[in-house]
Length: 89
Image (tube, rainbow, N blue to C red):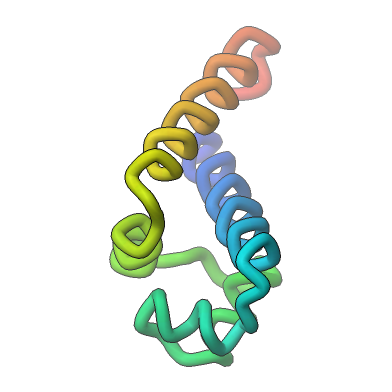
């Protein structure tokens, strides 16, 4: 289970970062969307800490539903690929 947690943490960090860049949002703007401090967002974006479940929920409710489904499908595919290659137990 620990491997899946790490996989999810990296996936979320990359997905949230990519969304921020595509929208042209500052780190401060993303912090507002996630209801966290800018310092906390910066630390999380750089991998110092993981996004909390509450921050992830705030992210998901701030994006279009189609993107939520796309992210879920992308993570599912990532898990399947990792399992096929034996990288995740």
